[in-house]
Image 1: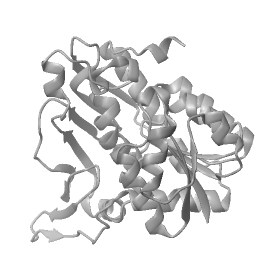
Image 2: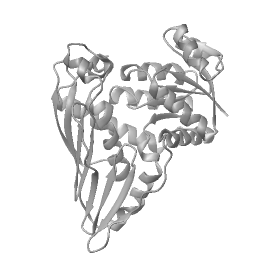
Image 3: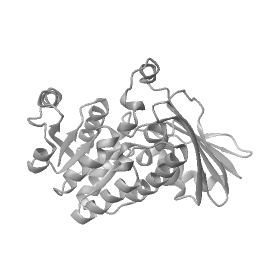
Image 4: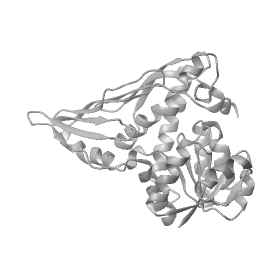
Length: 326
């Protein structure tokens, strides 16, 4: 069993813990929060006795083999370094870090220490994503790809009322592309690899982060258009178009449904059953890497490419974070 520690006590942490325990590969062994009271309150739900309000103390405790980081984006890299330096495996919520420089630094450190560094990006590990990969040859030569993830943020109303929630605060390395655009972007890189070039545009809020935008990844025979927004809702499926057929994908971040439309043939529902908690699949993949001690893996290659694209796209959009100046 992998003894798991967690950093962060929000809803996404609960969801990951349920996913990790469901795999049968983990035991939850430690909880960190900025205050001991919060750590203890959260730990009680899972009958965990090892609680910490110091990252260094948790890393040096000998109580954890791996740590899940679900703090604000701007803290991911700093906190990951603490545990990597103690040869503790790290699964960090997406985005793994604030920019490409931080990602590259973490990759080097993890490989030096001989431990697994992994971005908690659920999309590529879901069963229906595998269906998509296996179905690409049925489409013929690819011509057009359109991925969309647009979701009105529950915090946007507070922002409009003059508050400054973390979601729209550049101090926390947030924004539409970093928070939700990263899902369709990661899906595209997982399917098609690194593009030849890219273009980007976005609309910035007065706070300095992007409210919504569009990425276009340019490949030899086709483009991938990625639409993302935190200030509007989208309902259209994503599409992969080829000369012989098209795949329709419902909710690209979790791939809830996959339908194949081949020219001159009836539509086929290719959807397979998935766990309601799609984080189960990333948790299982991380466990497999930890148990096989694979510090170099395909997920890191994807994370590196995605981070490079996002960092470049932010430069184009004029979105800068304090972490960029460190």
